[in-house]
Image 1 (tube, rainbow, N blue to C red):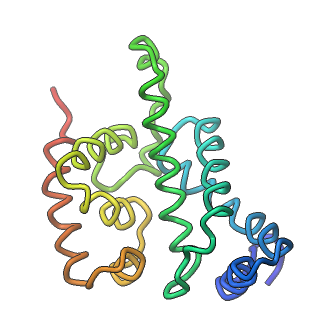
Image 2: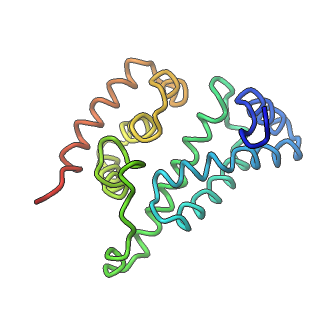
Length: 186
């Protein structure tokens, strides 16, 4: 595989196993290999590129610190998506707390080609997920992994450690909760 295409999933899994065993060189190679993927995940959540880059940096730090918690049952990149989504959502929450009301006027409009299939903008989706998470946190992660990142139901079930039927039900119920929150007013 050429360098432009990156490492194969098997090679990334191998680097992750070596990093778990304490190989610092493998950890550095792993972080270098997954950085573009992590940044893409963060860009999928945060419309402003510098914010996505901040979230990606946080995700890479989390990946380095938590590499030992990857169970090896599924692909490392699936586990990495969950960590990156979490970092992007955490960055969003932090920015939201720090924002002044006048800042809302300066947010970039999301590109409809890269937004969620169930949301008008990524920011609408993040607000909906924040609302749903308050009462139904079990629906948020599977819904984001399926509808934003397009992971298969099987990959999500493996990642969250739940039966396939449970994951499908969580996604279905999460969509039902999200739809009214995403409808445009007007």
